[in-house]
Length: 261
Image: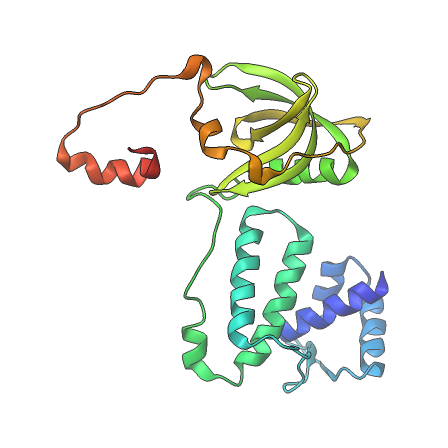
């Protein structure tokens, strides 16, 4: 929709400064002529757009223009940016990326009045849900399951159990869960005829089926016994006491953490 594009253009110019008509046209998949018409519309709406010619030319919003930040302080907006950045690291979601652009645009304009000292100290917390060395991680699987949830379509997949065996499952995904830096999907399992929580890292060959489903009443997630479920193993499992040298203790806590008792 045109109104969405106009808002997105405004946010990008606030956040990134000068952009050419070609850059904007490529970003929004429209012609350069459409971008020129959009700029004219924004000017008539009272947004001070400045046009520059030449090799480094383009459009930008005049220096002192700022979208109303309402009741959010600079510190609160910085916190919001941190949270949205963290979610963006875990989700391959264009809407999330656009939300990040909008919040960063608001923050950028507020920061101009706080000087370099504020900008240097604005990121006391950094959130990134992607594991080290994995640029994509589970993003494709998360995007696929989110699409299935929104379209109310069933999903087939091979699920790897605790023994390493693959079992074919057909599910009706209801929600995605990011808990303790681990992705799960809460779904109704057609084979088990009950709701189950599946760990995404154990799901393989995920495919969206053409069959749709009607959402079923979901049990409350707060009532799920996450810890007891996690430590359950077929046949009840076994506990083991493993002796090791004191020098290995630090490494054990780095890699196993709370699993060591």
